[in-house]
Image: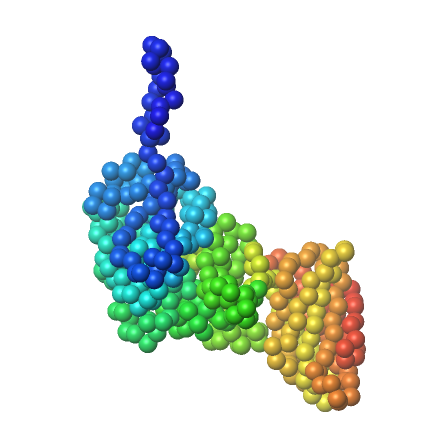
Length: 453
């Protein structure tokens, strides 16, 4: 690099910054030609810290602390990508590194194993996962020699990177502090024994997010806690047909990454509900977070570590929640308790709207028909795409979904709306409503006189 102190030639003194001479490292950028020809594994480690948050430094595998920015006294987070069929760099790794550094003073190391992951032959990339894990294990042991405890390492693995994280954890006898698996890869790992994939024994705490379990991801639980947003399969906002091109294949799979990034900057809190299935969650059967323990229901993402002790004691825990199709993804949840007084049982669907000034938000409870019986309280889950406060009006409509049958009426003795994410908010009630099918009824809610009624 040409020095800025050219005036030294004229006898003028100047200062020379040796660090400025070092070029920034970049992620390996390949193309489809490399993928078709096949690539041989080469692992590069790109270091980001708050001192060089926009300029990565290459780390030496055998002498990591030759790079002065690497600090043995800081916690270290690795970002490990997955299969790269076209050879291009992941579009999210630099943003993820930036968000991590904004949140905490860390060593963030992006693991670039693109030469090894870029191969039209997926099975060749799978074969390279163990080699990449062995390479990184050696590096971590070098850091351990300089005093960094294994508990200070956090591995964030995406797709194949999740299983690489697991293999590293196995190599180190489960002493790694944390592994976060973002939609761990399913093909070639489904049905394999624990020593051939990620499992809860690979780290002191393992959390996994499943967003494409019916295609590229892994279906069954792999961690101490497993999150299944929107049931773990199709994600809202992602293309439904192949006409969308590459987005059809990668949108669901990558949603796990964006959900995790959303959790780092704390834009909103994605609360997950321990449950047997997504259908049970939608049915409102899993909303009592007090049963989970004093910490309440766990959050997805970066802060999941707060629930480590209770989750490790509890064993493998499956959790479910729903999201919007855009960032920050959070929905606003209410438990809806309805008592009806029709003599005959009614089956149907509800649509609720919350109104605040000139804004409104809607929740459709239509995943299946609800049963309304005489003087029997029915609890439902209403999920709104945003939070409106204060709630000035509520509208509700009832439908049986039957086109050819006569229109029915639903006689409501009491409806109660309980906000689930803020216990300090008022529970809203209304008494004595008559809902005619497909006709919207608007009312002003009042504070409930007796929430046990």
